[in-house]
Length: 277
Image (cartoon, rainbow, N blue to C red):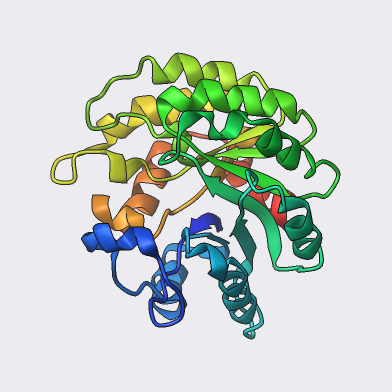
């Protein structure tokens, strides 16, 4: 069984995605029905929607769309990681609303395209700290040089559970472990952080990456966090940049082929089920 913790759905007929206007390869519909057909074939039994940085005034509409997908009979959709704006002084009111919406399991604020100092402001840090005791998680989408900033945010919020997206976006194509590896290891020392192994094939050479290219980054992440602080994600449809959903699932199974059954189950399903249901 696979629990996909990083599914993006794109409905341009219903929502606006300003950033996709300059990302032609992804600027097209990616709908739930198409995903389901492929997901069932590769053993995905549960999934979590990851926000797609919709227009800010449509964040709640994106959540409502996911709620409708959850309500389908036998739907594998378990909830939504909602977009948010912790830098906004009105975030407390947004959080009060979110806590009344069962669909929402956590939040993400895209940081890799924002100024590094955004997450270091008192407003941002204090608003993320408000997640303490709510059971809501916070996904970190950062570049390798921002891992230090991420650590400082986490230190300010020791009782909030953080999820590091895409292993911290290592340079798979370039093959350079450092300085990413050292920064990742430092971040992993904080017990309230999980690593999401997702997106790796999109960071390799799209025409020539191999398992040997992925392996050092995959294994370093596993070593740093341990099997009980890992979750798996497809990063669909972004994974299409490196071969697609089926290719990533096959690579995942190959990279975990020698694992103990319990460790593999924890990574691929159980840890996510414990975090988000």
